[in-house]
View (tube, rainbow, N blue to C red):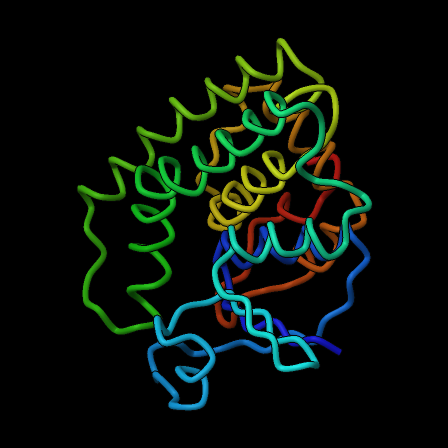
Length: 222
């Protein structure tokens, strides 16, 4: 069985886990403490980052975007990057939006400050960064609302990798109860649909040691 090296509350690992589940690919999951910089793990990925997919034949695929494209080629059905070239470009644009823009403006400011600093012993969380994250998420929730008012899913009429990427980031923020759901009912309905999928079950069942999620986190109806 392939092995996926991953970490708690990493949206990039969560995106890969969702893609694997959607495609029916079973893996053994190993939580990797990347700060330990184990020589064996660095041999797999010199960048020392997760996620990393290690196949039985020795193939190593590192990075969430690379892994998802690899899965799309090796397990093409069901497709998560589907449609015409223009439709595929829109899916990839939104994946980049959440993995780059949302990550920098929201995830790093909230998960990075509230969770990673605590586990890595990197000092007191920055109140300025947390305020910025809480302000920035409002703009992204407005954008999700804009998209869902015009489409069935974020990138079009079918669920795609764009939805998985967005939901992976938002699920991390929801774990620490920093998503203002009450102000964005359309976005809330979209997230309820995607977190009700079987692929989400293992994420909702997972908890971080000494840091339980809010009661609504695993509730499919909020």
